[in-house]
Length: 263
Ligand code: SAM
Image (tube, rainbow, N blue to C red; front, side, top):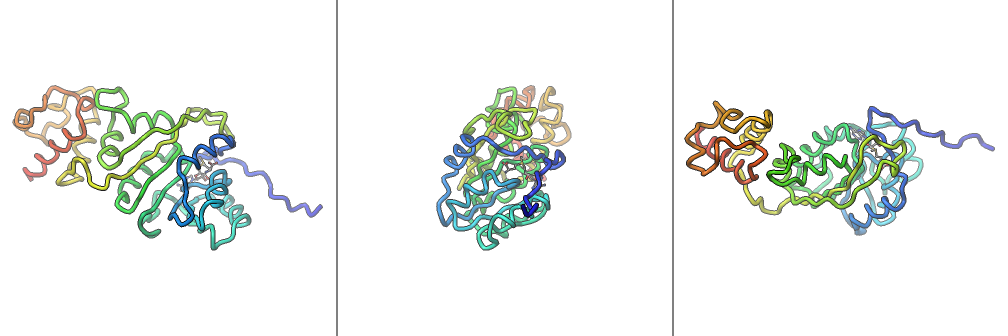
């Protein structure tokens, strides 16, 4: 024996490492992505390669972004550099536009950074064709919630502003090693080619939405005080006594446009 077998990787909790070990789930994710040979695809957090291998089987080459050096060393041993293009570092600082346009994004994401990562992907939406990601089920339910649902939140509004989203499948904790303490789900996000409700100033929209959901039990009149003059609600036909959760994305855009026009 050479004694050089790769030692077992000890999962790192700080990097949200829960590795997929369920072949049926892996196959379902690949089927949902439907990679075509020449696709420009990036996998976030390839880890031990549960999705990486099956993706590479169907692609000419694949980009991956991974923070864990030990895992990167394993990936380098297993795949030639001209087919697997490894970007070492924090995906929250990664410049997705450097990979070119019509980008497809996939991954079983580290759940501890999922919200900032979704916001980062939203910032690059113009160059992205689609996104297929595994997330905590509760986060996916917030993403796709409708106004009036208890899960409707800042994340719902800011992502629904930019993406058409669909929950594809639920995944149980036993499909991972180690098993996470939460249920998971796979979601597809497709950036709108033309925004259905474009805001004049997206920074103002983000501000209005953050404030309105900052104290979700309070009425708009209270949460947006100082930002939105009372008269605006009547003009827009929006009830100032409503709570953020009851408003549609288009309503937030109309409020934000009034605020932006006032500046
Ligand atoms: N794709 C593998 C799978 O399905 O088995 C691993 C998924 S695991 C939930 C998340 C992966 O993301 C890990 O490989 C972890 O090291 C990596 N990761 C965690 N934080 C990261 C970050 N900030 N930037 C890049 N990769 C990160």
